Length: 155
Image 1: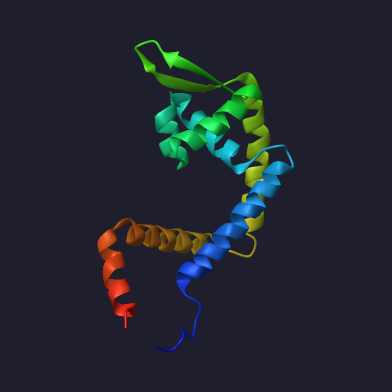
Image 2 (image 1 turned 135 degrees about the horizontal axis):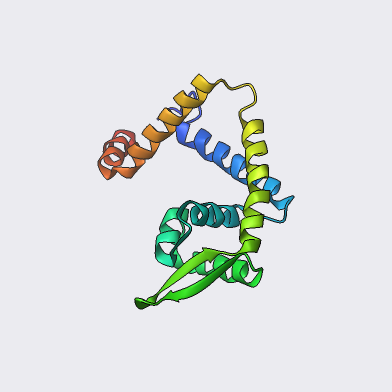
């Protein structure tokens, strides 16, 4: 089997994603924020309040990991949790006034970061990239698309 002549696209995407995520987290760190906090705040801001399990899905993390972040954010006064009066097993999460203020600070960083990331990239190129990334996500979401590719590589 001969080695590939070009770097596999999955490796390119992975390396780029790690670099962008690390840089984004560093940028948020300048205002004492983090990527997980931003994801929680922006999700809550979009929905005003939400059930903790729905929030975990929206943020894309497991429940126990979200609980860890929410514990810290609640201790910092950014969010508050309360039980749903209609279902005591359900926790509702809401932004506090301090969380609203943090969202505003983080948003300024996010907009500046996005502007930097888009440097030298046209709106049309951003649209093409969005389409390509969407296609890659769809390819990985369907297990049937993975099996034939694996079979082709097997000697």
